[in-house]
Length: 456
Figure 1 (cartoon, rainbow, N blue to C red):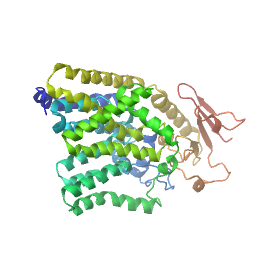
Figure 2: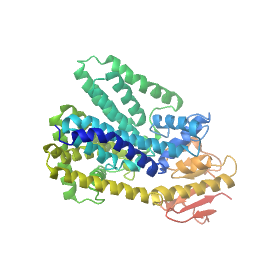
Figure 3: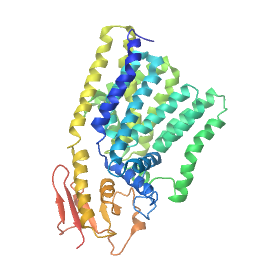
Figure 4: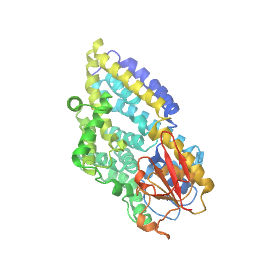
């Protein structure tokens, strides 16, 4: 497979990807995400010698990515408190660019360099909405899973096993890729998989043992809290709409558009597997990821859960669009170029929008202002309750009581008086939490309003 543009793509792809990475870091290294600040606070406490805890003295496994926390702890030791969020978001941009490079590497034989380069550039300009999740472990986890797959295709079994182990420490659902690669390796090696298996276990088992001893269980609290919080049919609809939105850019896709998206995605997957049967592992990875979340069914507001599966859907759909490039006809480039421009524009609009958007810049600014107030006015040792505790906890450095249950085991932190906190932060999305007949001691208005209630 190939086209007349293959030599040009081979020469231009890597410099262009580097330029896009620089642009992405400049545009998105400031993107805040409250859940990421949970990992940052664990990392900061670890770097300070307080242990792997959110609140000193409380051993609660409130994160799902030990790799992200450990990397953040190292970054904190090197760059400090203020720079840590920027450094970690920049690292997420590196993971985003790595996904594009690995797609180019994986699809080259099936599509040819020009078509594979187009699909990779669609990833690089944000076609799968990678920009939204740079502050989280999401992009790094998918990059590691794809890297392990590419290494397996090159039959570098030990390194592949090691990398997919890291992927599992980045996101537990990478175990799906680990299982698929185990089957693939067993077939290729005719069952001689002991050494690769040991390489994988050498990465994963120490964390499982440590978490079991230190926290009492390797199962994170977020998994317990979010498990099956949505019905099957509503979550299925959410999954289908998220996939169609990512591919088409239509935020509220119709049933017909969703059906067309599924047809194109299925056609792209069939095309890739027919031309390169090994890519069946990639297609299965995406399908099983989405199927697993139909079982887990967490809150629909948390779109990053579905990212690995939707990423594969996007790659399959774009492969079908890019495949005609191999014919050499000029018209074959038109759909891909239109998509490239559309996704680039959407990503640029997001870069312009997020600093003032309700759930990113506006929320972050409000929480930082509230954290500064708490740091100045709260008595030593007093606890603050909130539904979202990441940013408030990281910037105020006060003990937090997580009403969402991610980092707080409620029964374990009971205090006298019965209410186990001195202050309560209430945003407009949870008005029922506000104490009746009590005036807030401080209130912030704007795109993300917040009220703070404190004991007299």
